[in-house]
Length: 288
View 1 (cartoon, rainbow, N blue to C red):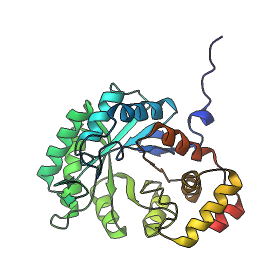
View 2: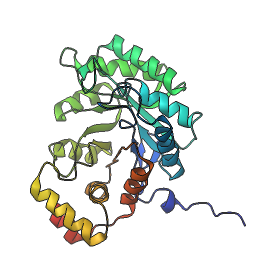
View 3: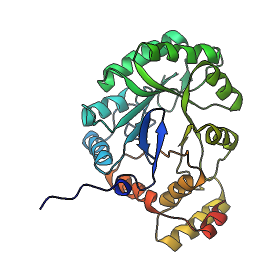
């Protein structure tokens, strides 16, 4: 007897959202942690990293986020090794604009020439002719933001980028970027303990722009009170703190697209269950 095809709710239990003309499930996968210590070099277990990526897609993930600086280059290489040629429904997003002099070190370089070279290198590593979503990883204080985003617009016109996103921006920088390009996503740090990007999130909600929270699983570790609330909610639902953090993000805004990352298949499967966790009004009140 043939196995029934998964229903839409099974494929995307948290629902979907749009990135321009592309629809993705609202819980993606962030591919930073499949690299080595300090986000530098190859992973300790390359075969497990490949399994994580393949298992994510098997479990219905349709959005994977990476960057040329993860490794550097390692995360993109692993994605291509594990998943290319890519399923039609899978959206691969990457970023350019940061360089890596060493482990845990990050330097901005958003010069147009650098972004062009970075995009070309990402295309080669990802084994694709067009990147679905290419994001400016961070504004460079030495380069006018309009020039950096303009370089991405040029690449988009050439067919090398489908959609443009930006990362690590404030409201003013988002406004500048929108004057130059159609911005379909913003990726800022955001979690239960750090809500400093609330104004940017509100702007994304107003305009229907996807918001990708990085470091989504802080889970209150930076705030004792928040950590206690998460533990209490998790205990009520027999869930993990990470699952509660994911469920809270998904409930926080309809444009939220969390991208929790891991180098473990077991943790991946555990995290994805967060999309099925439904928080009550009392849960939300305790966490908010």
